[in-house]
Length: 275
Ligand SMILES: Nc1ncnc2c1ncn2[C@@H]1O[C@H](COP(=O)(O)OP(=O)(O)OP(=O)(O)O)[C@@H](O)[C@H]1O
Image (cartoon, rainbow, N blue to C red; front, top):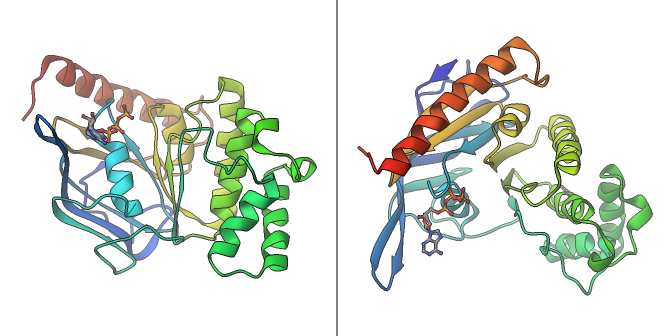
């Protein structure tokens, strides 16, 4: 079930194909605080291939969001390299669309369709075509009845659907998602997980997804990368491709394996035992 991080082979990597789309190579990142340098990621190495869905899982504070921000181009590594589509020194760009946990990612003064169309227009799509594509993507997310509503007229789940529709509308090479369902109730979260899984399957989107939820990781991922330690590194890289039924034996085994890993990482974090 486990593989060595960074040693994945295109012939055996489920869900992906060809050269890596993303290479995270011995990346270390920290934050400069008034009290000094705070390391967040110690040394992380992994790859994501085109079409692959990779989940980052690990105890709170292990640097999952920090890594995602480095891939998005919001942060530069202190050492090591993030190479996306053959390019290092990344700036933010529409080839890596980001969806965050916060429910206030939409422009409050734009309608639902206006929010999605605006993102398309910002990447050069003409106005009428942007509205057409936005409407199409929102319809796919079940929002055709709410195109002219403003964000304050939407539920949390609807807001996240709009944010996901906007991200998919940009047809990014990779979707970066940082706990996009973390602020939703369990029922809405479950529904959106299945909708995202279906959309990602249909579009063959590449996905880098941060979560605290083991079941969400198994359901949405082809691989789960477990981070741990302070500063953190990759502890395991677990194949979970094709697991969709929470009561199926392989799903249960993957859950048990990941639970064990997380429990030992959390215990280590609590006792300050790091290598
Ligand atoms: N802007 C910042 N300034 C200073 N330190 C930060 C900043 N952002 C994160 N950190 C620190 O870096 C470490 C990693 O944080 P990060 O948010 O990446 O972890 P995480 O695994 O995503 O956590 P969580 O699961 O709780 O969201 C933590 O110790 C955190 O306190």
